Image 1 (cartoon, one colour):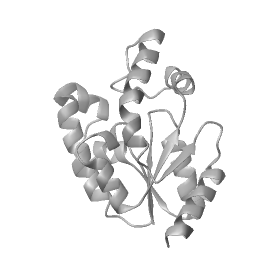
Image 2 (cartoon, rainbow, N blue to C red):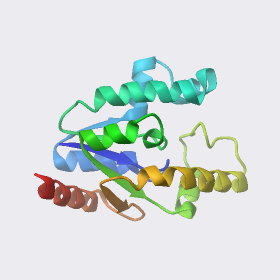
Image 3 (cartoon, rainbow, N blue to C red):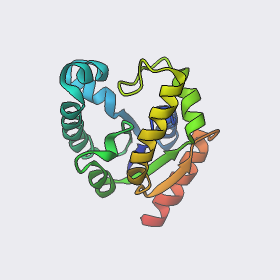
Length: 172
C-alpha cells in the first residue's frame, strides 16, 4: 500500500501522516525531509540558493524514487502536485488523499507555526492571508484530482485511517 497525502502547508500532512502510518503499520516519509537528505541542505536554503524552479526539479526526482517504495505513507510538500507531472506520478503509484482545510484555518496555523515555509515567510498578516488565498486558488485544481478529499480541520488520525481503509478495501 502506498498513500500520498497532499494539501496546503499547515493542513496536517505530517501530523496526520505519522500517526496514520503507525496505526496502519506502514512507514512514514516526509518528502521535504527526503529532499533535504538527498541534497544535504534545508528546503529553505534550496529555495534561497537555487530558486523554486531548481527545487521543483529536485522534488520531482526524489518523488519518483520514493514513489517506488511499498507500505508507506508519503507526506508531499504543498506545491508537489502542481509541478512537472507529479500528480500523475502520485495517482499512478498509490492512493492520493487531499487534506483539505479552509484559508482561515491555514492562516492561523501558518501564522503560529515554528516551521518557516519559503513561499510564506517574512509576510505581514494581510500579506500571508493574501498569499494563502492566491496559492490555494492555483493549487486546488491539482489537489482536487486526489482519489479522496478529507476534511482535515479537527480530524483525527483514526478518522483518516478509517477513510484509507475504506478506499483500500474498495480498490483491492
